[in-house]
Length: 505
Image 1: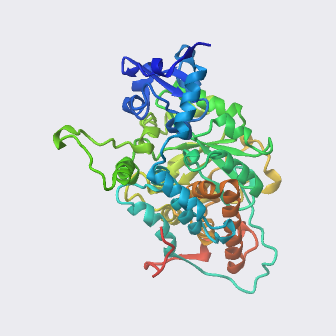
Image 2 (image 1 turned 60 degrees about the vertical axis):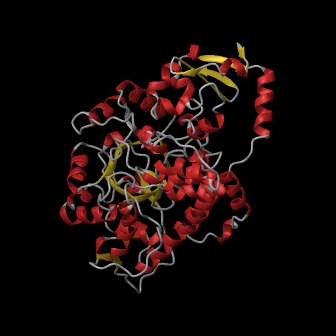
Image 3 (image 1 turned 90 degrees about the vertical axis):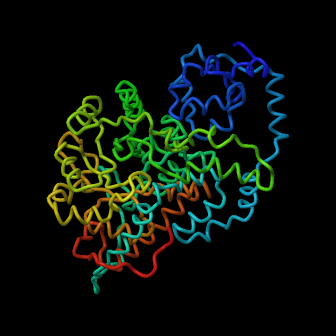
């Protein structure tokens, strides 16, 4: 294999010839510059340099193999250059944000002091690098939808039944026929390695230890194969959140890959076809620049020469190649033609589309507005669930009583299922119970598990599940039920006022 010096690589810094170093290997990325989802400037910033620190946390290990032709894998650095790079890394002065994180990690509380989901979020936001925190917590526009997703649960109150035997309470359910210890799954969320070196593997192993199911994102920071390999048991279920690529060929290759790796279902995301306006994420580079330069004079171009701000942020580059022309008539049959995996539509935001998804023969829907990260003022999922229950209760008639435990291994080809799930704003076990009363089979949490694995790794994931399990069981017992199938609409009432207090968002 050919070797290169740092000086040789440093000559290739233009759109005509751009090379980068990643983990001591040299790549010619010239032809990929304008195909990069985040734009050419993101790569040119590292042209002729070592891009490892910026690249590794947000790209799966097989990304270069999938996106660059073999001849563009030029070779490696020579031994002297590798030593020089290593030495320069040792002498690198830490940034102020790195120093802040280092100090926050020293003061991180013991895991046993985390008593609810919000505690976990507060700790994670302190110890995360600012860029990661901004990506994980950012929401659309003024964050109104994100906040209202959680507040909406406060408009639903219980009608508990008493004098019921509840000492033997079973919180388990089935999700697409796979057993789950609680009616909660890990929703697809990108770039877990921004928060922890093990990334999505923490979620996979934590899901197995607690008996719940993980949904891996198309935009995971580990490869789909690495996530599959992290399963503790070969029969551990694993779902896939599919962002359909604008190229049918690439989308088909992706679907066939995850099916071959043993993923068990496709959750087709339909609520994030174009980049959202996530201003905290967009502002992150400006904040970090000001944080590093505070008290120092800075030189800037004249206002008229500065150009437009990069409005993609970390998030925007992930969705810019998504198919924005999907339809019920075209897309669902197309996916059916290349896979036998069950298809759940993730991102339903109105009653009409819930009905259309059922009529299209999908196996289920997730009521979701992408965690409030996309269209501002899209309805909170719990409110939409309530409206479907009021306006089209027939949707739930196709789901109730489906996949009892003794049929959990039944072939999906034998019968059509249609299950309703929700995500967005869930912070408490009572939120989970309210959703189940209104007809959801299970709920998904995304950010909560990203924060948990960022702060405490795999142990954090397990801890959050145990918190939710305890709270769900308490809610069920307090309502007078022993199984999730006993949770019915009559047990909740929507009020037209908001409680005085609510967990902070």
